[in-house]
Image 1 (cartoon, rainbow, N blue to C red):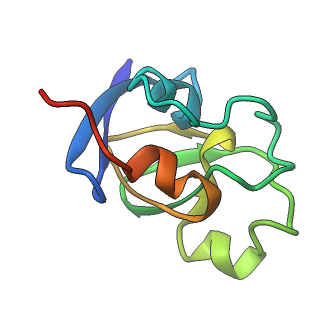
Image 2: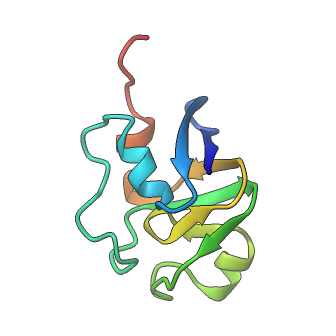
Length: 105
């Protein structure tokens, strides 16, 4: 099943299969600089705040997402899979790539 992922910072949305990570789905937006190298939760570059929705989270480095931050909805996009429609705010190192200048529609 696919779920809509809405990026609050840009107003964009994309579909993400519940069997793929939010980061993999985000990469289909075609932005240069979306960090796809690590994908294991260790680098922390793809940090997001989930404003609304349900997701399943995998193991994340506590160096990048503390337990308190995780309880507050912060996560690494490479380690979460959607279980419903999600609304995200982009944080950290990925912010410029995901929220910078967008191509004209």
